[in-house]
Amino acid sequence: MSGAAAAAQAQRGAGHGGRPMQVAARGPASRRAAVFIDKDGTLIDDVPYNADPARVRFTPHAMVALQRLAAHGFALFIVTNQPGLATGRIRHTEFDALRSHIERRLFDEGGIGLDGWFVCPHTPELTPRCGCRKPAPGLLQRAAEEHGIDLAHSWMVGDILDDIEAGRRAGCRTVLLEVGNETLWQLAPLREPHHRCRHLLAAADTIVAQQHEALRA
Ligand SMILES: [Mg+2]
Ligand SMILES: [Zn+2]
Image (cartoon, rainbow, N blue to C red; front, side, top):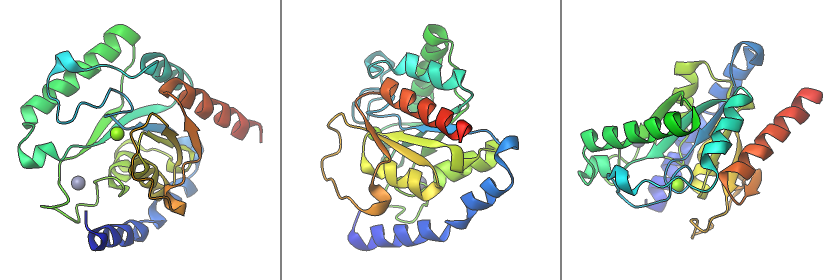
């Protein structure tokens, strides 16, 4: 993405800033908190443009991490940029099959039911202002609207700073998995993770501990 496109995207993201606050103001009691989880490099090992279910590997402790979050009442969403859908490197039918495979394994092996997937199918080259490609917060905001999610009590977990920025722009707290996938480290206040963890289970433990602390306060 060019600097100008990034700036335009940042500007547009900032314009959405009021919506999460309105959601929170309706009262967290009636709205669920969620954990938004990036797919590639966070839920499963990052194999660029992979559409082959046989090559899906969950990251360390991913299954028990999701079980723990679900047991504590969090809704679970996968939020993922899939530019290969726009360029044709992955067909929609292939991606749907991959998604079904992941859902089936989570359910069969972990008893985990995801609450939904929110996917950006655009590339910055063809659709520079889609509003849903992370670091924009569109995927999280759409999930919140469609599922009645309280963004102020929700979390975004990802392996790069674009995930962190998307989470912060949506009004969530954030956890960066420090697994070596971020390479540019373009830090800015909106890209500063609230917590840094080594794997998804450590992230889940952090989120649950923070939730307990918030309930005590
Ligand atoms: Mg990722
Ligand atoms: Zn998009």
